[in-house]
Image 1 (cartoon, rainbow, N blue to C red):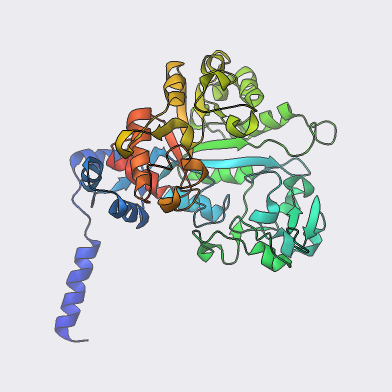
Image 2: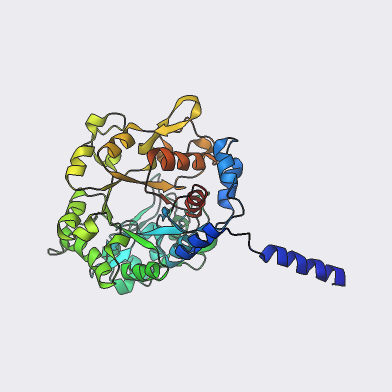
Length: 419
């Protein structure tokens, strides 16, 4: 290399490594919150965003440092590109600035708590089917696709002891139901995700290991008590109440302040249990709303079908309600996204709002699927993810947003001045 080339390389390195100017105010923020590493995706979304006031506002934060934000919630970690509920996925979410990290809590055969999105999803989220000695323990062994029938399997955390569970490796969630072999069935990653960071498998986590990791990095916790897919009491004496209390006990044993924990459940009875038996944790318990799927006759456009009502939820002690994205917004005039009646009534009843899950259902060029169902006619570009976030933050006033790729919510939170 010539002397001039060496000098040029040195100068370029100095420019690339030199930090952007940081104001006194930003230095104060840095002392309070960890730095976040925001990569290319939020800027890709920015580039896709239509010109206008929002794009102008977001452009003003380019080149500035980004910090962790409680507005940014790591949904199962960062499962857009990492196997969900693995150490690698949690670390990715932490590095991307998620201030709150989720562990979906399920129990094993020996009643130890582990992080899995569902009690019976091991066949799509781990390599259990490739381990014959463990696959033999599954509730429903693998059946190949044949004669027009779909391939199937059902493997539950409660099929395994903790020691057996810890032999598994995480994979990207998915299954090819046309698969004639185990290998084909396991190769079901959605084309808009990737197996790049799943090579060799992800490290599965117990609930206690998750607590230790998140605590080490100074973030907050949102454990979801998964609704059991086996009859309760499990094996005759493990009750739902014992399960719910065991989850809280892990935080107490780890010395985690209740103020750092947002326990969640789709079962109102669980939330009421925490309020009654563990009030320090119950006061910010989150009632997850899936009544669009679980309550017959529910219609997001008809408040009279919302049972219980917003006022009844509040009277039951619920402080935070967490519906899917589409319930909080609807399409407005001239292609706008506006706050829904559901959101207005929840706030009128004094309920705080959290929502799920951004970047979960693929590209928005075809409407975005389930999570965007009430605004499918007014979104047509991935840049509209930022438009939705802006409405959720400014108009709806949500406390936080679950995301499968938290750097997007971190980016928006920093640009919007949210902590």
